[in-house]
Length: 309
Image 1 (cartoon, rainbow, N blue to C red):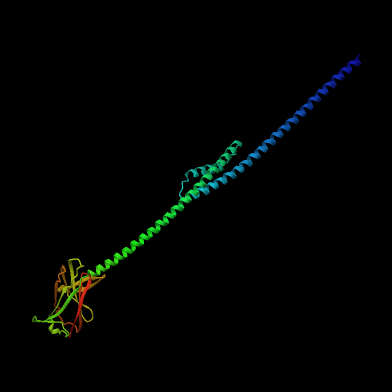
Image 2: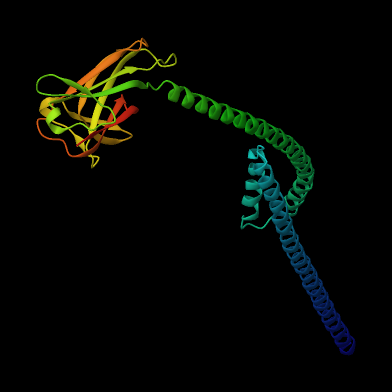
């Protein structure tokens, strides 16, 4: 009886041990499975992170590439005078996306790649626009060249006409210059006797006054109206004889100030008007040839010489 009880007790102990062993084995198996699944999950996540990082890098490269392509089109269209505002807005959005520091998700990467693919169509459209702008610019250039040629020809014609006009005006100006003729120089002595200049010389004792007379030559081109007439007596040293107290003064000829001996105002009417000038020097004349020059306004109208002995 005791022997049987002991056997039953040992049998129960063995069963308990077996249960414990089975439970431990099951725990080990479950732990192993858990460790394995955790490892698999970590591996998958690592692979996903690596894959996302690779896709992000590739996407950034595509963003750089399409931004570069857009910049090329922007520069070309701008150079050709086209509108680049829309392209600049797209490029600026891509640059902002490229400079973003956040990690993109798979869906975001897919959306951006789809957007980049659509931009290829926009780039192709802008390439066509560039071709059209170039053609238009070439046509404008050709038209401008034609216009420049025509303008140059017109300017040349105008220049020639101006030259002809200036030449004609110069000829008219020369033709309208008054001339004097029939110049007569006389010496009047103290008794009022007049000796007209001949081949013989005047003597100082014969000269109380010098008389200069002349007529205005016919000139149908010259405009009728007031004129200033100056008479200049030059001694043998070509120095002007003048006396301010007796009406002498200065006038301008070709930008140079000269002394005149006598002056009169006249109204030219092309009727061969005669002018007479008298000058009393009050001292002896130098021996030698003297010259009488007659100016109208600012040009020489005639001259003649006389000699004093």
